[in-house]
Length: 324
Ligand code: PCA
Image 1 (cartoon, rainbow, N blue to C red):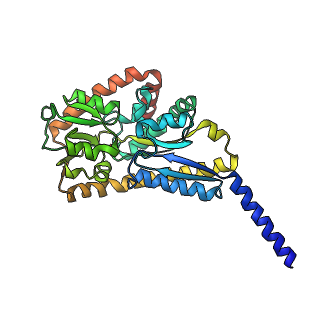
Image 2 (image 1 turned 180 degrees about the vertical axis):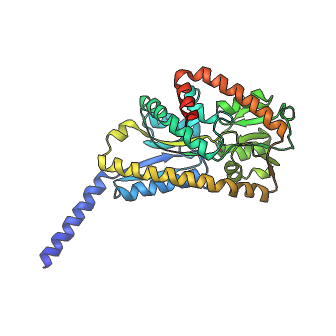
């Protein structure tokens, strides 16, 4: 009896040793603040993988750009400096215009349309990423984008000369077409940029304004609902190739749950954060009819420009989306 329990003890100790020998830690850089719903979703995804693989793979998230800044995350994963991470998909528009499809003003401006656009574009995104040594795991949209200012703005003329914080090519182009002065700033650094006057305006979600407490510097949020950009989680393809099939299955299942939960959070967070902006003292409401129609014209120009740049791949995505 004694011998038997000793043997059982020994064998379970050996099991523990074996799994400890195979255990891997995957650092996961993320660009947005820890309290943001994308980061919360990423942390739950990490926990799901750690639990589901029995500790074989422990994913540790690093939000707020603390490990790599947003603009450096994709390269870090492509080159194997980090095995996994999250980035704004449209942040890569200068590598390939197709990445910017989710930031075309008024092409897909509701959660339902954003889901359709993602369905239409996902196979193309997967194949572009695959050629860049990356595997796409899941993607979650941001809430609809609106305009932030530190004064009342009722037309494009009112925007002239304002210093505008941009986060991708499309937002910089929007600034140019409205006579504003674009400056690229990571979300993690906007509170300071607004406090010091480096920027005075931006297009973003209520979520980011709420996370960064922008009411300390800004006064107005206009619910333009111009587009819903997406974040996505990618893994280095070599790392993925070395991962056992069983663990790949766990990761894919956790990714599916994360995409569902993250999208749900994005929807819930939309109203909650707009109320938060109001409670912070900001004026929150729809844009004037004049501003809306002027922005729609600019959106048409940007879509035309993008279709030229994105070629057949871009046109195929937009056609597929419009047919849904
Ligand atoms: N927040 C991010 C991207 C889109 C959004 O809503 C940002 O402002 O950087």
